[in-house]
Length: 469
Image (cartoon, rainbow, N blue to C red; front, side, top):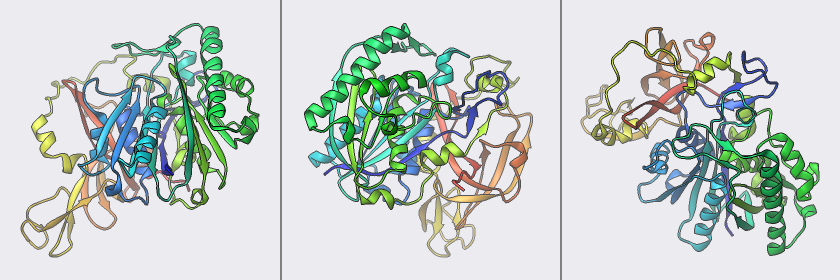
């Protein structure tokens, strides 16, 4: 029996909310920082999902998004490298439709059921944009969710699926468009959302048996809170059965939305509970699960609830607009950055993307970046690769650069001491200046340094430790 062995999520630290000057809305929504995108958020969700799991046991990765940084390059390969997965795995991107997340989940379940893979990591991530200060922008949100699909040690068993595919122009974004477009609300709701989701749920019950009253929680897609409330009645569920959609706290996270609500439902689920997740986009996918005893014994993780509580409201809408380059400001009077060397990026994959240092086999000294000669005992070529990306640490010292050509001034440069040994010089992001201090607990976060000549240059930065406490 295939199903979910683990799950995790990621929600950016920053929010637009009532205290944000210029936002002019009581609603709160998550926003990715200037150095985050769907790939960096996917890596963070993957780390959360793989806590307590053997990364070398993962046989495949499927990445789902509508906001891929690349039009021609596989982002799943970047994510797999940053997560330090094996080389001999299959990887694919599922893009260009809002139900990409559930499509990826169905593919992973089929692969595990067929025996072609034992463990498949599914990650859905999105940071869609809409016209500034419009209703759509207020209802969108940025975030990612991850599931490990397996046959062993399950927290929820798959009970079946049902799909409808139908061409409908209600929401779209053409190549070159920055913002999501949509058609008239009444048409999109009545002929799209309500009709298609109702048919999909009915089709699921006809195929697999059961009724709406048998479902413990249902997590379904909707573009906003009003239409989500209308669906509760139209589809035949009671309000108590419907998983909270998190509008006003998180927002619609696109391809990750219905799966993120599923992860939220799993966080509070009890053994033996029936769960449904219903996606939407040129049709609908319905996936059913039944929780096992393992749902109450997962290793600690941040999850949806933990990341929701770990937040800071942004000071002004102008800052957010600058992050998204909606409002163009004068660039720093510096020469244009040089294009990254593709050869160097390939050569330094382990150091830059996997964040490997080395542990000397002779004396046990740990250092980053890895060196051929141990600086402690001078042993040569005798070190074991050591991953730092999931290690915590603290700030040894730091400096503030107010002249740096960066969107987020001042640039904070830190020297980080890792628990268990190792020291690294890196940038700090997601920080408020009043919290930067010596001994500040930190964790590492995969981020985008810059984009030059279409090359997205990724690396790791320190961030203040986000915890559920």
